[in-house]
Length: 151
Image 1 (cartoon, rainbow, N blue to C red):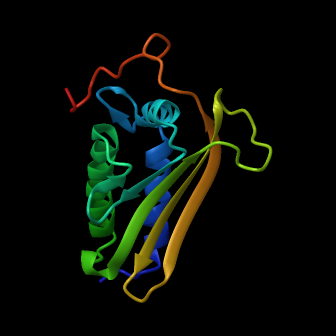
Image 2 (image 1 turned 90 degrees about the vertical axis):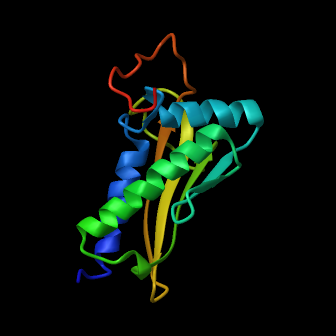
Image 3 (image 1 turned 45 degrees about the vertical axis):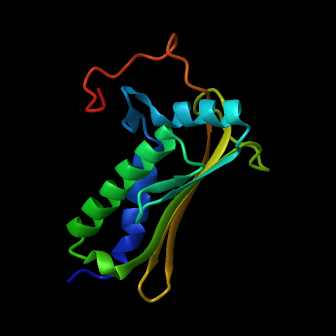
């Protein structure tokens, strides 16, 4: 069986995927859609429980993202030859707003912080986080991904 230390790599893989452009819902970048939802609802933080596949706040978009990443967690853990019972808790926390530090402009938009945390059956937390920028979803500016399984 694999070693729990590999959960560090799983957290990093989930983080990279979550903020990446291939994380899409209905063909559009999920992070931009979440930014729009945050702005419209006045909600600065989202929590995605990767064991239950549930999200807070509860919304069709957040629930879809939570389910997608619950599946991704299972896939990555299996690829490390670890049983899922080695994972006690797993969540992604996404916060929009001032990060309290200067953030380089890799892209346009306002700051966000994203943290992936996986707690193993020994209580050790395996965390990865990033601070970047993201603009709200804009279907006039973005190109819809042609191959989306959400259609």
